[in-house]
Length: 82
Image (cartoon, rainbow, N blue to C red; front, side):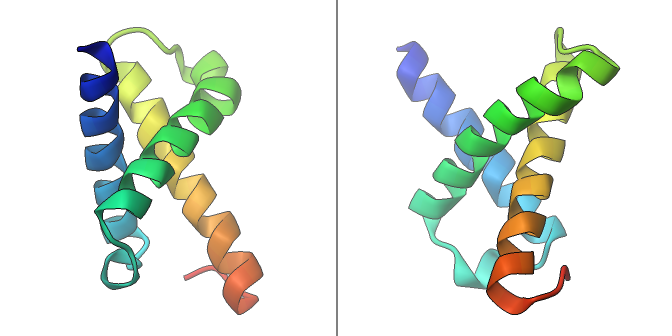
Protein backbone atom coordinates (compact mmCIF):
# COMPACT_ATOMS: atom_id res chain seq x y z
CA UNK A 1 0.00 0.00 0.00
CA UNK A 2 2.84 2.41 0.75
CA UNK A 3 4.21 1.95 -2.79
CA UNK A 4 0.88 3.08 -4.26
CA UNK A 5 0.81 6.14 -2.00
CA UNK A 6 4.43 6.87 -2.91
CA UNK A 7 3.56 6.77 -6.63
CA UNK A 8 0.45 8.91 -6.22
CA UNK A 9 2.24 11.59 -4.17
CA UNK A 10 5.18 11.48 -6.61
CA UNK A 11 2.80 11.96 -9.53
CA UNK A 12 1.10 14.92 -7.89
CA UNK A 13 4.40 16.56 -6.98
CA UNK A 14 5.79 15.95 -10.48
CA UNK A 15 2.63 17.32 -12.06
CA UNK A 16 2.69 20.48 -9.92
CA UNK A 17 6.39 21.01 -10.66
CA UNK A 18 5.78 20.58 -14.39
CA UNK A 19 3.04 23.21 -14.23
CA UNK A 20 5.38 25.64 -12.46
CA UNK A 21 8.18 24.97 -14.99
CA UNK A 22 5.72 25.06 -17.93
CA UNK A 23 6.65 21.58 -19.18
CA UNK A 24 3.25 20.00 -18.51
CA UNK A 25 2.31 19.71 -22.20
CA UNK A 26 5.48 17.70 -22.90
CA UNK A 27 5.05 15.20 -20.08
CA UNK A 28 2.66 12.36 -19.50
CA UNK A 29 1.59 10.81 -16.22
CA UNK A 30 4.51 8.36 -16.17
CA UNK A 31 7.09 11.13 -16.54
CA UNK A 32 5.28 13.17 -13.87
CA UNK A 33 5.62 10.24 -11.45
CA UNK A 34 9.30 9.79 -12.33
CA UNK A 35 10.00 13.51 -11.91
CA UNK A 36 8.14 13.52 -8.59
CA UNK A 37 10.03 10.51 -7.22
CA UNK A 38 13.49 11.60 -8.38
CA UNK A 39 12.71 15.17 -7.34
CA UNK A 40 11.73 13.91 -3.90
CA UNK A 41 15.06 12.16 -3.63
CA UNK A 42 16.93 15.32 -4.70
CA UNK A 43 14.84 17.45 -2.35
CA UNK A 44 15.42 15.05 0.54
CA UNK A 45 19.13 14.99 -0.11
CA UNK A 46 19.76 18.70 -0.83
CA UNK A 47 16.89 20.80 0.47
CA UNK A 48 15.45 18.92 3.47
CA UNK A 49 18.56 19.41 5.65
CA UNK A 50 18.26 23.16 5.08
CA UNK A 51 14.53 23.59 5.79
CA UNK A 52 13.78 20.49 7.83
CA UNK A 53 12.19 17.48 6.20
CA UNK A 54 9.51 16.53 8.72
CA UNK A 55 5.79 16.70 8.02
CA UNK A 56 4.59 19.26 5.51
CA UNK A 57 8.12 20.57 4.92
CA UNK A 58 8.99 17.15 3.48
CA UNK A 59 6.44 17.73 0.73
CA UNK A 60 7.81 21.23 0.16
CA UNK A 61 11.37 19.89 -0.15
CA UNK A 62 10.15 17.19 -2.57
CA UNK A 63 8.37 19.84 -4.67
CA UNK A 64 11.46 22.06 -4.73
CA UNK A 65 13.60 19.06 -5.65
CA UNK A 66 11.28 18.28 -8.58
CA UNK A 67 11.55 21.88 -9.76
CA UNK A 68 15.36 21.68 -9.55
CA UNK A 69 15.27 18.45 -11.55
CA UNK A 70 13.10 19.98 -14.27
CA UNK A 71 15.35 23.07 -14.40
CA UNK A 72 18.40 20.84 -14.91
CA UNK A 73 16.63 18.83 -17.62
CA UNK A 74 15.55 22.05 -19.38
CA UNK A 75 19.07 23.41 -19.14
CA UNK A 76 20.54 20.39 -20.90
CA UNK A 77 17.69 19.98 -23.36
CA UNK A 78 17.34 23.59 -24.50
CA UNK A 79 20.46 25.28 -23.22
CA UNK A 80 18.40 27.51 -20.92
CA UNK A 81 16.07 27.35 -17.95
CA UNK A 82 12.48 28.45 -18.59
